[in-house]
Length: 510
Image (cartoon, rainbow, N blue to C red; front, side):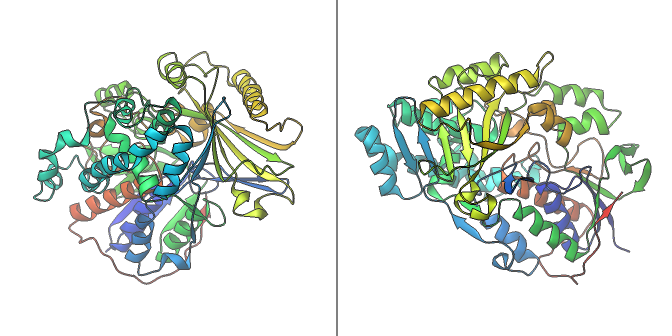
């Protein structure tokens, strides 16, 4: 009889875990509290405008290719990845503008318009960041690092002997400052700390691997919208026989004698041999898992990542000065992060990120219009925040910043939807409204990120951006893979890479 595995949460980590478990022969059921799968990677539509509400750029697409290949399928038959070039257009208050992309010579030419000396150092910076990637990818991206037997292998030990070469003692900002001097260019590369919700003036320079992943390996868009990934993975899971239950919130993970027994969903107890929790690890220990107060305290002491304030704007005009991805920088980046992390207040001069998928998929907006996804970095939740007032205030600051850049859309917005840190907490259970789990503002954070296997409850595992290896599409998918592979090993089942009998199972709503 097949082992029973339950997945709590149908975010990318949960879907990945479910697919890998099913391919290893487990009977798998997913319980998702919301009406659609995807977690923070979701979508919204109104008035002829369609928006992605989560990740807007794909890196390391090979992770997705390998997932479909494990099921004996070609990813191309399900999803089309389109390289984005330029990857991002940057704007500064002094009128400077820069198009950043993968092409090294084009990037050097763009940098040279601002600082010829910095442009000459760009190739050296890429080599530096590429070396960090080469030395860390196998360990930090593809290995459950809390499993000593997997970490201390013959292949990994040489990387540990070169630990200082991954630049762990400097901050990201200091590491970038070795190559670039112009404040605009330093700010451009500092921003990659936000990809895992951290402060570049505190996070270790090891994270300079992130700009390499984007500029060295490339950034991609999923045709039809980023939510197509959730739809494709859901279709794959269902075709394999995974049962997906929507509007089915988990209320308690039940254990006895430190062994998993099952989960309570909508008042019903459902037994399971193994459970992958795709909920935020901190929130799970606060709300779903009883009996371990010391672990609860330990997790709550970890600093959450930044959160975000999102405006979805249906804009009834096209703006040729904007591309698919755009950044309007603040004048003082250090002050912005001090306000967010140290003061835990909304910045008075926010950096503004704008993604417009109608640049690639015109049907995402009515003729002559654009769908704007606007994201501002925000502090995680604390008592006393009035998000209605903050949202109104930040809206005015964004519109003023756009007008200063020559883009006045105040009278062009015909559809508006907002998401605050409180919404991230209420809709997705994100710890204190954070987007990326815990921050990486300490040198040891990579080893402090919660493990994929519970050390407290046998049979309980974790996947998602709040657990190892972290946030972002490829890392979250890999967390689900790691959790599933640990379960397969513990159950004495060899992790399989084969196509089992595909069958469609109905999605149910509880």
